[in-house]
Length: 361
Image (cartoon, rainbow, N blue to C red; front, top):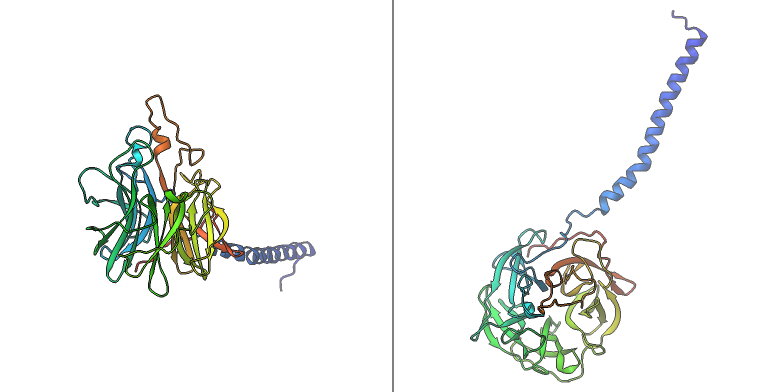
């Protein structure tokens, strides 16, 4: 039999109590911390978007992007206005003589690789192409793109919307110019209605630089029943129509952010607030978001837009003593952010983290 002195007994008891309390402390700490850790793990995006999402490696002037799945290449394609931002030329000449650039992603939008520029010339000379939109219908891709003959140094020119068709998105056949509300039209966006007919919205400079609309049964012959703007008011450009959260939506570029419109029937549009009107904190994501596209996939919607990161405001365009805008003012980048449906409208926090994943089709 071992006899323990009272002093040793007290010391042993204190050691056991201290050990037991420490274990209890650890258990309580872990029980409190694990939900927080799990919450952080659940909210942190697995697939994040690069910022900028893309810069054109040839001229550094990517603008007016539109995204579509290329079934032949089994990849996402971004078609965009390839402004010649790296070229020193008078005033806005860098915005003319532009081709339609191609960026490709085979990893669900994570990275984009320049694949070249489309050859859309159908007449002699060097000409200008802006702001395409592409839809796929019955095995054929249809492109509608703004066309201006020649290369200019100042804004202007005879702007029309040209129609092309293709089976693979590489080789395009010129189909002609749709008969629209004037011959000063740019920035087409297309949407197929539930009855399988089509609509096209576009900017018409002869109608106050407002958004006009026409309809078609086959994407070839277009008719309009009214010369009243679909979206009136102050001038704007770059309309984009899409469906999300049981509503039809249109966003337009007001040169200080994008205006949101909501509709139940694609006929009557309710004007709502602005998105992308506050500069972001990500690289190149400033000052405001301009003319872009919206991709809806499942329960998420992404707005893909371009920025002029060297400008304090989008419209800033000073020239030097030679009449040339600085390169920092000319260059542009492509960015992406998530759209949220909140309180009956669309919102966009361009600094908020989000899951960015374009599924293969």
